Image 1 (cartoon, rainbow, N blue to C red):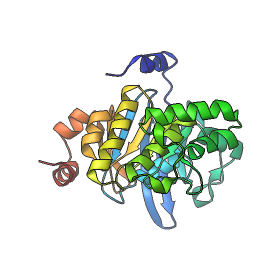
Image 2: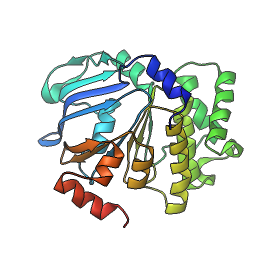
Image 3: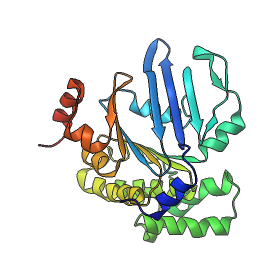
Image 4: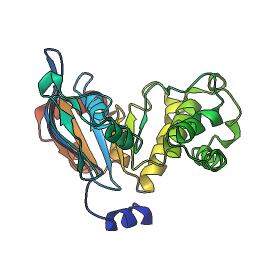
Length: 268
């Protein structure tokens, strides 16, 4: 169902955009991730599901280097993150590498995180202009394009407070797209929205998936996970309990824990 963009991306090479091996993450004595592997191939969508506290958002933040892990390997397009120190003292050795990689992994948060003192257009333009040092006129053209793409091109001159929650989240997605990243990372993008507004955002994410964009999505929405993902990962207590194509995971869950989770979260 993916279009030609995915085919072109796949032809560019088989190296995954993000690859994580044996990742461990602790907050003091609390171990949140206990040896997790994750691969996001180019042009694929990976959904992370699991109960609250299972470690899925922490895994996403570690992938984007917003959190520092204590053990394991993280690679971006085959390039390993360089580390200094060990255990709780481990941190990235090269801040320029972190900045470069993070600008290619755009994150969309649960709470939108739009700047209240900027218009919607200014919000979308800010990072490409100030971080990437791109030409302002060129960025404005692309920002307007991406706002049109998510269906709120007519809201450019409005302030975030004037928009609904669904419109604000779509603005946040346009802001992420304007960085023209190699992958999009979504952390519960619809959980702060009521059901009607949620569907506005789900449609945008489905459209992006159909274009063959590389995405990792942490979500509580099992229907969206099943519709957009190529691969679903079920986390339980900091470990991968089960993973596979959505039709397998949702249609024939093998572990008792996943069966219990789905019975509590999937509408009958």
